[in-house]
Image (cartoon, rainbow, N blue to C red; front, top):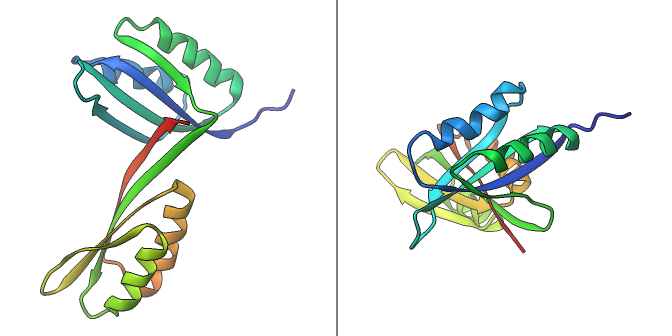
Length: 158
């Protein structure tokens, strides 16, 4: 039996109440699985929240976690995404001395742009697929980034 350790994205729709996030994440911790990315936001016009979890693991373990997530009282729905649209955001701070037009062109290639300019720095934002965000960050190295902040994956079924 081969053990696959693939990237997985799971969405969990929960009641928006205290301690729900701790209970959801403890299912992963109890099995020694790291959460690579975690985003949580309230669902508009409801009392629910949408949790998006990116992790690595075998399909067998993910199936177990999914079944146990369904058993948690405040959980309404669990979706392990197959057909999905996913995006991640990143903010990158550059020294003002770097070439702004080159940075702007790079950002445009990754669905982004310059969002703030100060006297000593410029901040760029990109929102794209997680693999493309990774490539964008690698491409920014030539412009001496001061700081990089990734926002986490969000996903929705097609």
